[in-house]
Image (tube, rainbow, N blue to C red; front, top):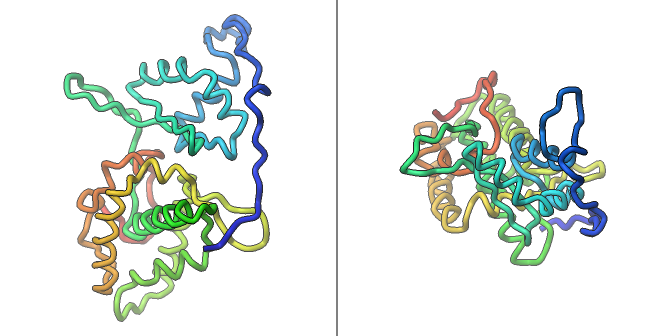
Length: 253
């Protein structure tokens, strides 16, 4: 396991001033909002997703903790729930599911290709290993590539295309803020602790068995779907808005 030496400065709680009165939060002409500016920023970050990271967004995290009640209320107005893990210092939103109401869905799902979902599984496993050893979860690009390469089809003749697919999988993980690049010349990334909340251990065990079987078969499993793998209904897939995919890789419907 690679260990990171980078440190993140954390602000003490008393550095966040109490929220000003609502009439002091006017930020533009005609503003009728009632939240202070920094509280609005926290709300917007939650809506943008995929999370508020207390290790990397320390001031925003403290604002979120201070105004958790009002933020939760505003999100409930949008049929969203606020998930806060104080130990991991991570917060994110998820869609409210209620059988007795027809709630509109605000969060859209981000489609993941097979390799992208395989990478998410790999990162979650590495996060578990790092936690068990009391280390920061850090992975290199070389390790990512070595892991994903086992899913290349036997007798594949289009190696350049598969290289693009692996690169795209890595970029998707960074886009969803599941990986944070560390300072320095080496391509090393810290795995976001958000994955621990989004993918419980029991789900990981089931997914690991499926992907191990596929890797041993030497195929890319193009016939499998994210629903079959248990991924599409997971909040991690819902963390970012789905965008048109202009790549030439095989996407799972």
